[in-house]
Image 1 (cartoon, rainbow, N blue to C red):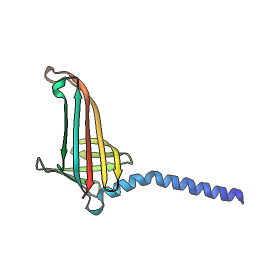
Image 2: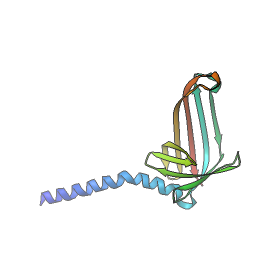
Image 3: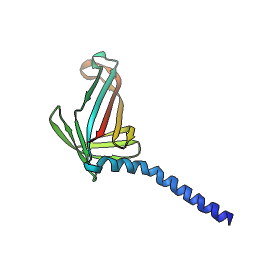
Image 4: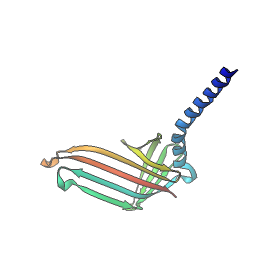
Length: 148
C-alpha cells in the first residue's frame, strides 16, 4: 500500500513539474495578445560600442509607438516618429521572443516579464570594414513594452 501511495505521489509531482515548465511560455504567449494585444513602447534603447570611435552611440527613445500582437502569431508595429507601420509574425518561448518582418528575423532574450510589462534585448558582435573604416564591437537593443 505504501508503494502505491508513493508511486501515485511521484506521478503527480512529475506531472506538476512538467506542467509548470511549459506554463510560463503559455502565459507569456496569451498575455501578448489578450485584451486587444496592444502594447506601448515605453522605451527603445540602442547602444553600439566599436573600436572605430565614430561608430559609437548610445540613445534612448521613449513612447515611440506600439506593438499589437494577434492570437494567430501576427502583429503590427507602429512607429509614431517615422509614421510607419510594419507587419510581423512572432513566436515565443519562456525566455525568447522572435520576430519576422518580411525575410528578416530577429530573436530577442526576454529580460523581464510581468503580466503587463515586458523587456526584451538583442546583442550582437560585429566586424565592420566598410569604406576602409574598420571597427569591431557590440550592438545592443533593449525594448520595454507596457500593455495598454
